[in-house]
Image (cartoon, rainbow over all chains, first blue to last red; front, side, top):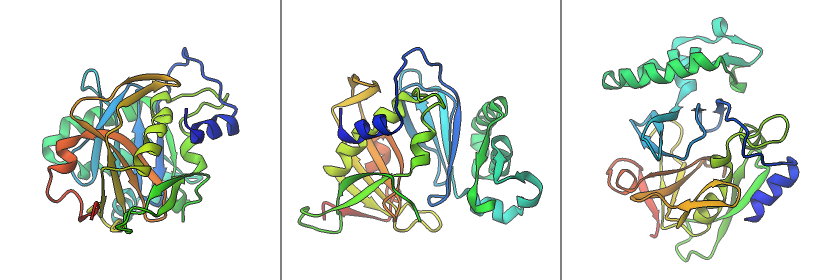
Length: 132
Length: 136
């Protein structure tokens, strides 16, 4: 195992438990201005939908396991959402996806609905520091 | 600006000799999101695929520049073809057929995504990236 992983395992005192059930998570990266959301821990690959949306599909079944939406801050700037939906620097994931609906083309409407359904089910909040 | 807690050397694609490296890496929060509060690994696939990321940025087959979206002109994509994939710690699987491993790096050196992608969608789409930096 490579040294970077050993350093991470040491720093975080990681103990692997193969029986741990995967929990959905989301992460907003300020520099890349992208929101990443995984709702399954399967082996996956990335498929680019357009310059703003990439989906993650199961390597085994091609089913959706997550997605990444880019230029999120640009979208939120455009619609002026900050005052109504951000509390303590965090935003509900489902709100973000609704705001980013326009990044999905008409032909990707079903894809958007599936992702948004997962976002609503998780009830996750995402830290968006630029907007705090 | 990114605060890179976990660094790894990457080939400097601006040096045509291939002899130089620069530091790329991850912020602490990017690791924390893969873990649970009790220190157990939540997302084993993404965590242990960092081994592949480390391999690809050091010895890429190609490096592209420009992600073709606002404010990301200096974003890089390192592409490689590891022979294995990781399911979890020390548990390997064959590399998925027809795919390449991509590591996306922002201008600061922050690794922002590491994933397998269809090779045709990386090499075969004309406007995917602004230019190819490596090999020159």
